[in-house]
Image 1 (tube, rainbow, N blue to C red):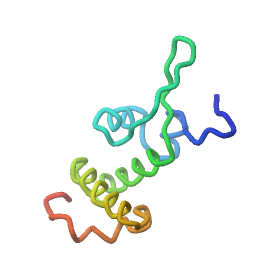
Image 2: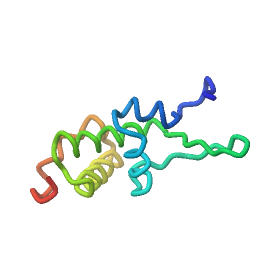
Image 3: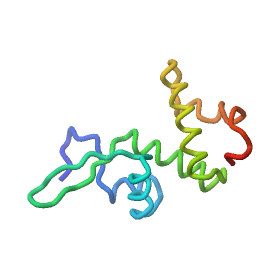
Image 4: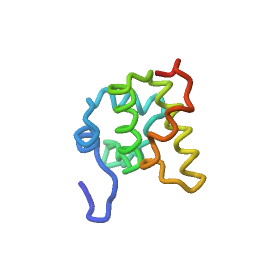
Length: 107
């Protein structure tokens, strides 16, 4: 099902790369953390996750599981970090540099 030029991943590949369950990934889709595209194949639809979805989900996982953020706090931190990216910084590399700007209640 994977085309040589396809840079998107199915659910099984995505959960392996991120290290979470498929249920957790579907929940994160419902709350807007990841936004896969759907590919119609006959009567079935398949989710396809971008590399950006994988990176965002991996960062959220780290914040929630290791750094003990709430899911909402992690989403806010990621949103602020993404805004830094839009200013010309590489957000994946600058991720830790804005931690001091969040209030302690988000942790």
